[in-house]
Image (cartoon, rainbow, N blue to C red; front, side, top):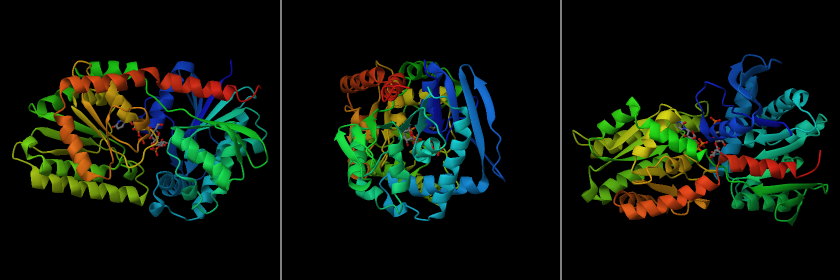
Length: 458
Ligand SMILES: O=P(O)(O)OC[C@H]1O[C@H](O[C@H]2O[C@H](CO)[C@@H](O)[C@H](O)[C@H]2O)[C@H](O)[C@@H](O)[C@@H]1O
Ligand SMILES: O=c1ccn([C@@H]2O[C@H](COP(=O)(O)OP(=O)(O)O)[C@@H](O)[C@H]2O)c(=O)[nH]1
């Protein structure tokens, strides 16, 4: 059997806090097969060095490298998170068009390739993840690597015309055709990539998913919606209800229902719009006043990027403003928490919450939506209010779907969720639970890897 080699910027090292859906999902995927996981150590150093850190956990071997402070600034804070991230989330207004950071991005990809090329064997299945590493296949091929190379994009891909607004877009986006297989979260992302390939990268679509690059080399692409370890999350949620932190939250609600939001502090998640919608719900539905407490968990993310720091300030002000206007001596409508919570506790919060507010302006998938469903009590499930612009909306049809820009619409959806009869809650939950049980993280991994293995014989 071929060895699995996973490559990503973010690595969930054993014992460290899991940050974001990519690390959570790859950790769950590798637990079953074992293999090698290569990426950034999470540390920066003054000068780039040749050191590779090695750790083991069961059948998983972790190899990580440090980045120099300058490279980290240009590659991660710069090109990845100030240029590609806003572009990929349909926000050209926030894109930083500075060309120097693109040079750091290429440099770090070359550095990854230098280390990785020494580790790879021809029959490995190499699975590279996300927008940080789009040119990595090209760099590996230039170093003579012959292994099968697959790429999965965890974030959305916007329309071809938006991608083409990036100066030198051919470099990172054109380089995708050096992979053997490209994976996207949804069919729409796949279709937009095919448009880009035809219109701007000189390639051809022979038929859906079978593509030719500008030199006539065949490669493949398909949608593989990422899942979660559904039974694991369901079991954790049951166990979490006995944890002191979860019991304390329950007691503090004093019989009121809970609405929960869990997101990295990121402008793509639509948190200010959600806060405004909750305030609007309090104004428009005075009959429900004081019956619902909204807990927003928002761990700080990418603090080196100015847009993220500004968002933090905006949310602090908004939360203060809403509470100032609506709180009672014995009730605070919005609880806003920046601390990261482990799944062992978070799943209990999900289970306790009558409503989950998952309203990103754009999101590749959004695992929180799926985790919330998995954590529910089948006899008394809560209601998922879900943005139609999250990848998860393409699968969770029976969520209460909303347009996150439509503040009145989200406010009304909160009121509908808060009063939804048990029979309707059960029916909606059952359909979503069936989907995430059937198409889970293991199926995602199996389908991607068997498609990658089938792209050519070694
Ligand atoms: O590594 P960070 O910069 O701290 O950010 C965390 C991750 O954020 C993004 O996650 C995406 O992947 C999820 C799993 O597929 C998906 O559900 C979500 O919609 C995406 O936003 C990012 O794409 C990852 O690379 C980051 O590690
Ligand atoms: O305090 C927190 C907040 C979030 N998460 C996890 O971080 C992931 C977020 O993934 P998602 O796909 O929703 O969004 P991303 O952050 O990757 O954009 C989910 O597994 C959450 O359970 C967590 O473990 N603790």
